[in-house]
Amino acid sequence: MKIKHLLITNISLFTLFSSPLQAQNSSFPTIINNNSSLQQKLMDWGFSMSNCDGNVVSIRDLSTQEIACIKPNQQISSGNYVYDRVTNQIRPDTNVNQINTRSATQNSENQNIEEVVIENYVSPMPSNTDPRIADVVIDFVDIYGYNNCLDALLLLYEGRNPVGNNSCLQNVTEVFGNQISRDVMLELVDIANVRATSLLPRKLYPAYGLRRRVAQSVGYVYEIDVDNPEMIRLAQSSGRN
Image 1 (cartoon, rainbow, N blue to C red):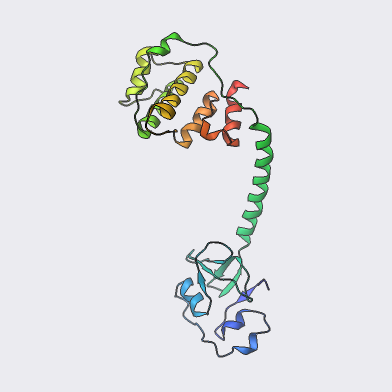
Image 2 (cartoon, helix red, strand yellow):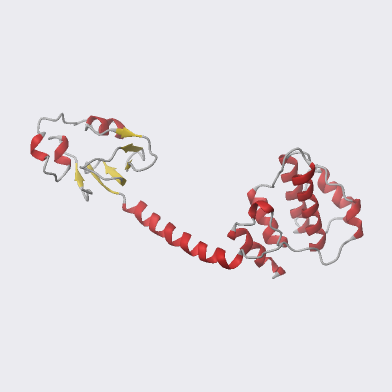
C-alpha cells in the first residue's frame, strides 16, 4: 500500500501508517530525540537500511539534506520521500516527481530531435587548401598538451589573442601570423585529431567543452560525438549548413 502521508509521533512505529497492523504493535519503542541523524531515526523506528540502488525508499531530510534509504515493505512503497523535522512528518517528495516528469518529457523531445539531425552528418572539409599547412608542426604528446593546443588555436581563430608559452600555437603563428581562416582552422583541427587518434600510444580526444567549441566554430564533429545530438546541432548551426 503506497503511503500518501506519514505522521511520526512518540506512540509507536505503526502510528506512522494507516494500516490494519496498527493495533498489534503498540509497545514498539518510541523515539523522542529530534537531534539524531535521519539514518539513526529510521533504524530506531525499525526500518531496514539499504544502499540507494534499485527499488528502494529514498528519504531526504529537509533540514540537513541527509539522504537515507530503506527497504520498502507493506507499510511504505519504494519512491522518493522527504522528512520534515518541524512537523515530524514523512511525505512524498513532489519536487523529485516533477523533475522526473520534466526529464522524461525532455528525453522524449531529444530523441525526436536526434532522429532529425544526426542522420548522415559529415564534418566539413576545407574549401581551399592552403599549401603552407604542410609547414605547421602539431607536436603535443598527451591530453594536457592536446587541450592546451586546441584551446590556443580556437582563441587565435576567434581573434582573442591567446597568450602563454604554447609550442603548438607558436608553430602555427610562425606560419600564418596572428590570424587564421576557417579553412585553415578546419585543417588544423583535423591534423591534430589524426595525430591524437592514430599516431600516439592511445587515442585521445579533447575535453568535452573544447569539442563543443570546435563544433560551434567550424562544424567539425569528432568520432566520439557522432551520436551526440547536441554536437550535431552545434555543428549544423555553425554556418556551414
